[in-house]
Structures are given as C-alpha cells and as structure tokens.
Length: 427
Image (cartoon, rainbow, N blue to C red; front, side, top):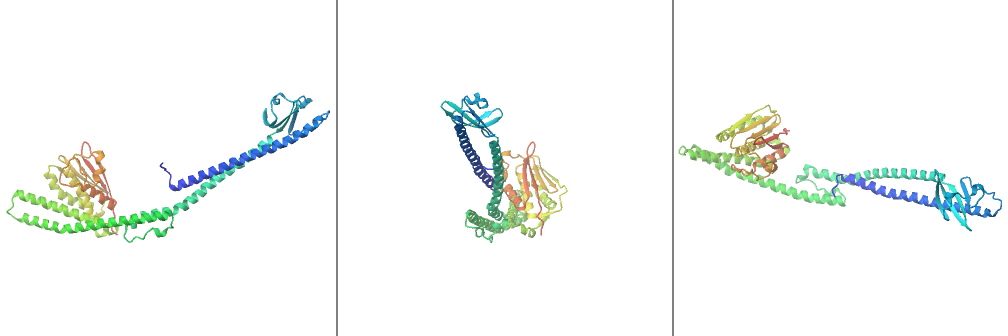
C-alpha cells in the first residue's frame, strides 16, 4: 500500500490513532462501569426501601409514605397506592420504566399473588450521567490533542537524524574522494545502519566516477596525437598540386571529420574535468560570437546539400559562456539538423537567454522524443555518419552547465530544439 503522507505525518497519525483507540476504550469502560455500578446501587437501595414498605403492609391502617422522589403502588391498594395498569405486567426484579416524559427505576416484588412496585425518579441519575459523559468526552478530546502534540514532538525527534542524513547525502561534496564517512556521526541503530549503507554506496559511486573521469581523460588525451597527425597529413595532401578534384574532396572530407573529432575529444575532456569552480579557466565567449563562428563553418555543407541556412541573430544578452561546451551544443544540433533534413531549410535563432535550431526534416515521433537524448539512439531515418552520440552529448553538457534543452515537432514536419542558457559567470 502506497502512502502519500510523509513519514513524520504517518508517525503522528499512528500515534493519534493509537491514543484515540486506547482513550476511547478507556472512556467507554469508565462510562459502562459507572453506569453498571450506579444501577446496582440504585437497585439495592430500591430493594431495601421496598422491603421496609412491605413490612408496614401488615398494618391495617396504611399511613407510611415513600421518599419524596419515590412512588409506591401495590395491587388493591387504597387510593393513590392502587397499582396502575401500565405497571401490572412487570415481573419481579429491577426495571426501567418510562411514563410520559419522565423515566423511573422500578423495583417489583410479588408476595402471595399481590404485586408491589416502588418507582424512583431517574432525573438525578440522568443528570449525573450527562455530566459524566461530558467529562469523559472532554478528557477524550484533550487526550487526542495531547497525543497529536506528543506525536509531532516524537516525529521530529525520530526524524531529525534521518533528515540530517538525507541532507548530508544530497550534498554535492559527498562525491568528492576526501568526503568523510557518514556512519561515525550516528548511533548504532537503524539510522546508523542506513548511514553505513550510504557510505558503501557512495564509495562505489566515487570509484565509478573516478574510473570514468580517468578513462575519458586518458582516451581524450591519447587521441590528440593521432588526430594531429591526420590533420597535418590532410594539410600536406591539400597542398599537393598533383591531387585531382575527387581526391581533394575526399581529403577535405577527412579533414572536416578530423576537426569534428578534435572538437568532440576536447568536449569529452572538458566534461571529464568539469567542476563548476573551474569554469573561469575555460575560454569564454558570447552567444553571438559562437553562433557567428558556427554559421561560417556550417553554411557551406548545408548549402552544398541544397538547403537554405537561415540565421536570425536577435538580441541576446552579452553574457559570456564556456565557449567549448556552447560550441559543442550548438554545433551538434546543427549537425543533427543537416543529417536529417533533405529539403527545405535549417534555421538558427538567437533569443535573449538561449537559441533555437529548427529544420524541415523528417521529424521525430512523440514516443521516441525522450529516447533521442540517450546514447547511441538515432532517428528511424539513418542518414549521415553519426553514431547517435550528438544529442546525448548535448543533454549531458546542458545538465553539467545547468542549461535546459527541449524538443518539439514542427508542422507539417521537422524538429525544433530550444536551449535555455543559465550563465555561470566566472568568479
């Protein structure tokens, strides 16, 4: 069963319900016991009064009267003592009788065929019961209020170490290698066991992050040398006058691929070392500057494919961003648009706080939109030479920098990627 309340609220509710159950049972027990005892006492008192009256019945001239709040009747009695019809069906013993708007306790005795009945007004008894009910009800409400208060205090006391542990686990410094263990700060109870489990999990997570960073850093670093060799070889080949047009086109293609690979390596290397306090060490550039550079880089291949490149510079803020990462995000979105657009246009629009890349390509079905940001996922139209890492890299960079990227379809076809930039100014 799934509860929507917090654990603290559940503790308060459980404490209140338990107290209500105990207090309710106790109150009902008190009322029932008092009612039973009073009935026993009244029955005994009425029985004694009736026996005294019966002893006087042998007197020929009846002169005894019952107590002021009592009525005495018997079969064939003189005057007011004659047994009324509504009491003639009562058997021997104690009864409760209702006459008009009043209620009475009745004690009946049958001697030699004659029925004797003694009635006593219940008004005082009922008043005592009402007072008792009121006192018990007030006590029940007060005990319930006290239970809620004590449950709240208890919940805060019980949850305090859990809340403190949650804050410590959420703190970003817990992923640092020198972060102190959590378990020594807690007692050897259930919370302490939870802290030990968190220490073990965080330890494995730190090791995995360290391995990933080292691997990415090492691979990115080692790839630089062969990429530089490829780039230098392409430059030398392009300077060779003996190469024909077809060969030159292939060498230029290899050169562009090397440049893209170099930028990708640089981006991965920066992500591997990414720490928000180190952003001041990265090259900074405005959104307009990055867009101008990428428009110059992508105009030729886009127009060579027969597409129209539309650039709307807008009026973005003059905030400087991490140039390498912003280049990677905008460049991958332009590359993605080029790969999946055969006819029409590609539009880059700068806004006050980000940019939008739109195309008239094949579009992405709604059920695949979220998956498109996963690694090695490509559209159903497998055009181009990518591995499906571009949008995944875009998503990862945006998460790292605190930016946001969203994908929507255009009518009648095409995609619209909107990126909102949240600046992390250098300190």
